Length: 90
Image (cartoon, rainbow, N blue to C red; front, top):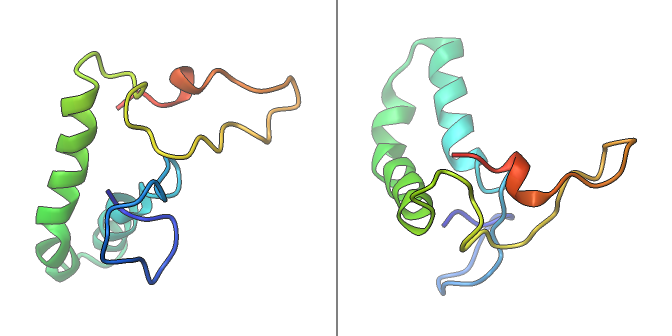
């Protein structure tokens, strides 16, 4: 899993979370969309794929309920917290 901060550690840790770790997929993808340069995708594709596969393997129903790391939640909603599983579809 991608960590929530950089530089990370060499050991697995619970320091990952939806909306933060997703940057490991979103940033290379967005960079490619903005520049058309495929180099960043080529450099990161394997890690992007492994990240998404790990989430899907633990959550075959496409709701990220299992192995979701740190639950930062939806802290900006004026109506109160949104249930975590409602915002973590993969």
